[in-house]
Picture 1 (cartoon, helix red, strand yellow):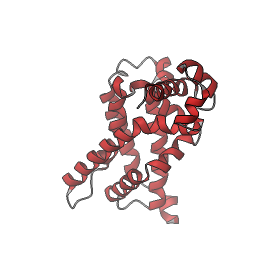
Picture 2: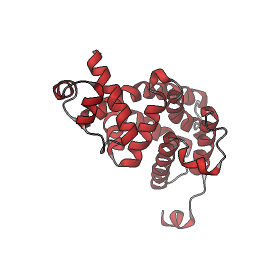
Picture 3: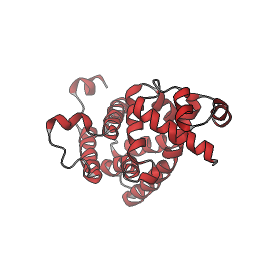
Picture 4: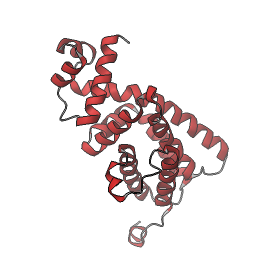
Length: 214
């Protein structure tokens, strides 16, 4: 990767994380990166494509780790349904471990991911476009882990879980008013709490009205 391309990606990542995608202009990226508009068009063609490149640079290695963890989870389960806790952990752990490593983008990319989920449909669209095989593998694993769960109800729970993960990735600034964040820097503990919370949500009984309708 050229120095210019690297500089554009690093700058765009920081500005998107700080201000959001919509509020960050190409002019701002150009000024901070010290490049001209032609350089951005040469390497990325558009602001949307630049965002995709920022996401893919960080997310592709995390997805590789997700698949390895899911392979291990399914191997351990053998012919039995995999543990929903292990499936969830395989999906969310790489993102949280990445957030601890400055060399992998650290808290900047974590904040960017959470902001993009909250901002609109840009992040889900990128994920659906570029990571469909990963999503399909995990969807299959979740169905195997919870074979009695009606498919429509399971998809609702996946939808809700996505929002929870996005909020967790955004960080804990919104919780500072409660004064209970002495453990917030311990990302492994945050991860454990997240997996426990999500697993309970997935395991929760189906509402009677939903079960009767099915």
